[in-house]
Length: 332
Image (cartoon, rainbow, N blue to C red; front, side, top):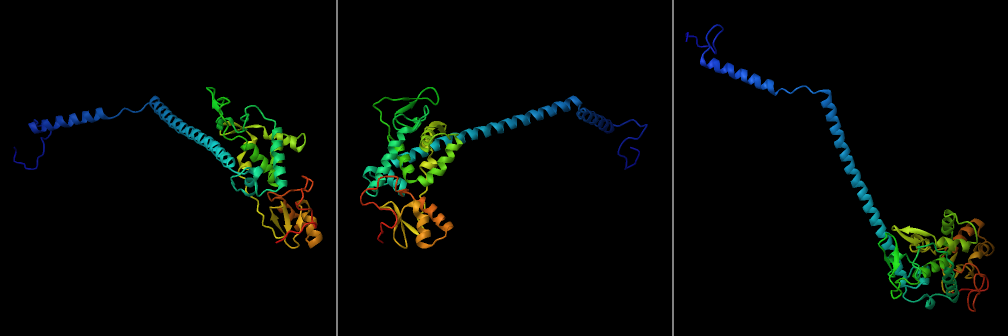
């Protein structure tokens, strides 16, 4: 208007033109809007509320994690319980179709009755019969077994679970046990032919259960009948599968002796004399000049072999059976 080309707005004291008026009102409006959008300063109460809310969320997250952990643990316990019962059933099934003597001595599931075992001597058959009969002296705690087959009620076909959790009732006399006599014969065979392996462990278990009074047999019968939990179900110590069904076969490799299963004795490799297990040390020291320490180690090894008659006085020795040392020479 006044000929100046560098003017951008009206100067002080001049009447504002339409452009300056519009620009001025817009600036004011923008300032007002920015002023309105500016947040109010937080109070102490607001800060406390936000902290409490964050703490609540943390607690909820922790509870969810804990619930999941408990759920996983419960599922694992249930799976483990089912697994333990299934494993026990598998072992019982395996023994039910096999000769108890062959299973105990050779871990061989031969399909014949132990009374007709072609590999067992008369001495072994008699020892097995005595052990089977002795099992009837077991002192059972309540609900530790099926009254007929001695297996846990939870896996026996003769029993069914009631509405009360953990309680069972019989289906009737017309229903038969699928494991009749299996547990009795299995434990009898292992006690008869795995005695050196069983005895130390059984002694420790009886002491742990505070069964310290009475003879060894009386204590054993009491311990075998104690009630325990297998897979959260009632069972007896007789079902402890780790020892009674998973026993490893002892090694029969020895520098001085070899196992002669047809006679249930150990034969000296050098002189070929049959030696009773309780005479091992004396034979090695007197006949072969072996040191006491080495002879003792060999004796312990030989006595751990399954199927050996441990002492001549254990049973009446029938005609044709091996006699004590230096009275029987075993042919190669």
